[in-house]
Amino acid sequence: MVIFMPQKNPIRIQFSTACKLLDVTRESLRHTIRRDPSFPRPIKQGTTKQAPVFFDYQELVDWHNSKKEAAAAPMEA
Picture (cartoon, rainbow, N blue to C red):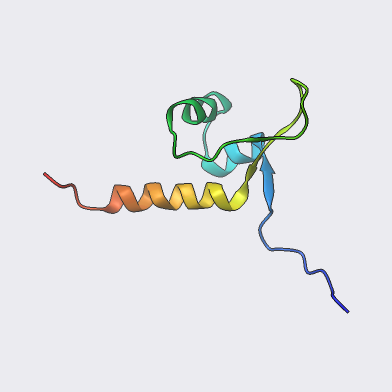
């Protein structure tokens, strides 16, 4: 018998939750999506213009950690 154990972290999060998690405004997050090719691509649920947008939680965490590591690395001349 397999028992489903809920994950501690969510699989996906809403756009507004991603803003809260990263402590940025909606416009700042939109800007990051457009300008940073390493930022995780949003996942649209549906084909309509008003369909909700989600992000993969682990991809956001990995992106954030890579930015932290890059900032902590010593600058090369």
